[in-house]
Amino acid sequence: MLGLNTELEALENRGTKIKIGLIGTGQMGTDMMSQISLMKGLKIVLLSDRTIDRVKRSAEIAGIDLGKLKEVKDPEEGERLIREGYTVVTTDYKIVPHIPEIDVVLEATGDPNVGAETCLLSLKNKKHFVTLSVEMDITVGVLLHHVANHMGVVYTLAAGDEPPAIKELYDFASSMGLEIIAAGKGKNNPLDRFATPDTLLATARERGIDPVRLTEFVDGTKTMVEMAAVSNATGLVPDIRGMHGPHVSAKDLLRVFDVKERGGILNRKGIVDYVIGDLKPGVFLIFTTDHPRIREALVLRDMGNGPNYLLIRPYHLCSMEAPLSVALAYIEGKPTMYSINQVSDVVAVAKKDLKPGEKLDYIGGRTFFGTVDVYENVKGALPIGLAKNARVTAPISRGEIIKLSDVQLEENIVYRLWSIQADFLSGNLGEKAAVEKALDLI
Image (tube, rainbow, N blue to C red; front, side, top):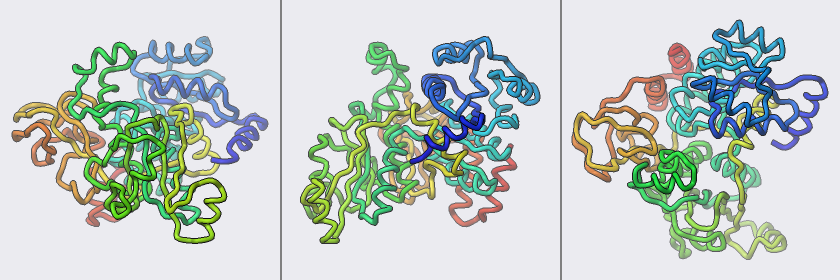
């Protein structure tokens, strides 16, 4: 994304701004509103959330003039008011992609179904779509990327989270022809697979965090989802189901993330993983090269004696970086990150004994957590993106992977997209037919 500052400044100097429709004004949305207010060439012209009061509270925090907010009920009214210089607000996210004035839809709801529906609507209306929903991307992102290409627009994950930060290191190393051994992130919380919002309630209150959100991090599901996204975007794979996740400090990464023949923990090169230690909130990549001259050059640059070398990005700024993906999509027509193929998947594992008739709750809840593996190894298991509200039809033991045959799925928009994508990936449906079927869903 080098040079975006110059391009954004040029837009600003021409009196032009990239007009953004933001869906979701929670913590991440508020951060993005605040960040965009500091940037040239970008302007939020629409805000959408469940209630107008929620939008106004976030807008006030971000420094948006509340006197310039106008509620709208339909696209035509929204279009007129945006042209008149207002920032329009709505509780109906479905109208956002239908407003011609909006150039890019930025989705930060955290709800994969809302994300998938607004994505399809945005792509159908030939608008770039930037999302924070990694859960949606690992479930149906391959198909959504093909839909975007067909419509001549961009579908992308937003910069700032660990996956795009890792992808940044991956692109750098792979562009230089270096062999990648491992890439991953530092996990910010201790790992407890069977944690629930109940067991973490006191900690969540102390930290001022939603207990469900804290649980999805502590039980490892979020990390599994993030590394699956990296896998699907790069071709790197989990070395073992659930990854290794060693307790290790940054200074020991090179020693631990090496193949077993050299004293490390890896069965192969080219893997994704995570660590619990002092590398937080950073990401890392380990590479090697056989070229003797390049090895000499790396020694000269104080990268060590090899044969493996470490790159670290010691930060990721979450939603603060997300507007850069908006600019990249609009100015250069390029995604920051997307699923090229379904290389890996995250599947649901029972947190407790489940009985027929019970409903699965949600990521970060009381009934399941996620674990990552190579896609071919977990076919027939329940993808995490389809688990919410699935009804159990057969007894499932605590710690057991939940199979698709064990549940009755809720047939929502993500499920329908996933079904089309499954036919596409298996070769039963061509690309054009898959895209057309996806667009026909809305």
